[in-house]
Amino acid sequence: MSPLVQAVRRFPNPRLTGLGSGLFCAASMFALACLDALLFGSSLVVYGVLFLPVCALTAVWVRRADLVTAVVAVPIAFAVGLLPIADSSGGFFGRVMGLVTALALHAGWLYGGTLVAGLIVTVRKVRMMSRRAAQRRRTAA
Image 1 (spheres, rainbow, N blue to C red):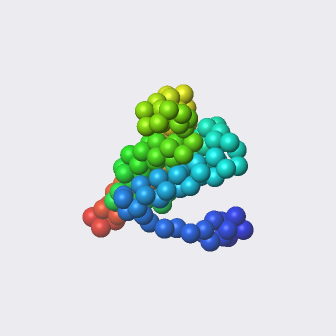
Image 2: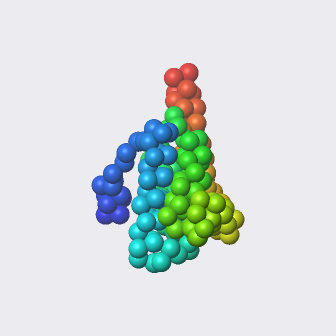
Image 3: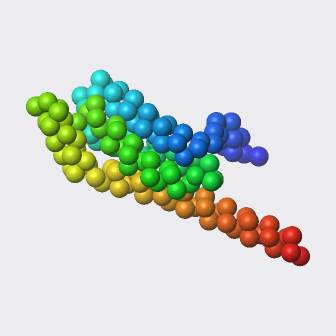
């Protein structure tokens, strides 16, 4: 077995429920947004780049029974994470307008992360369906 395969197998492999994957993604994005605000002055580009691996991890770590929830949780987590870094001048309505503006201007990151999660979930679902079909063929034969 190659050293790369051995290294990958040592990584954690949790299986999160639908709620757990949503909480993981939202909490990770909120924490990364706070870190982004401290280190990079609320850079939305840095936030978007950090969003992509969180999407991938969420899609990889969700249970097979809850695959669809990863694709739903990712955009919600993007919005939750924007709260600390969106422009917040002018009270409550200023914060809402800053959040809506950030969502509109950086929708590419949102779509990209959702696409990453969707592709990973789709590949996992297709593999799961092909394994089941192969198992049915073996038991029928």
